[in-house]
Image 1 (cartoon, rainbow, N blue to C red):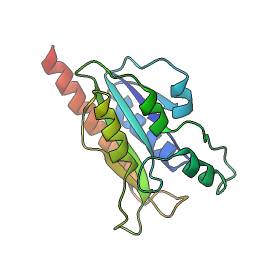
Image 2: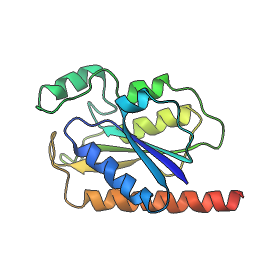
Image 3: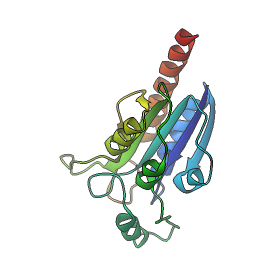
Image 4: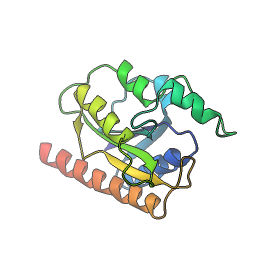
Length: 175
């Protein structure tokens, strides 16, 4: 199985989750991990599973304005031109049967805060004709800049292992 993980990260939390997801997939498949800026420069993936994720900004996927705002809150370089929203909006629809999964990071508190980058990415993936391998998954950070909430990296890895097993079973039954 081949998988590609594409992510957007401002403070490093979503990048850490993307790497944990890649680690969980890597035991069962060949995995490529790319920032959204790098993915925008590459051709559309020929993979069995595309996993896409980003941080929740203003109740959904980031926008250029929210990325510029995030860039003022860190010394780390933040790509402000292209995010998951723009990358998916520019993508071409895929053939039926293509599989994807969506994840996001969001503040753990307040717990009632609505919105999810994962759900937004999932909707966009479905519009591109992807079949979602699982429900979009949120991972939690403490505050805006993090760190990740306790236990989120192992949870991301376990979710990815679940995705890999699901996809391998699907592929085995398709043959």
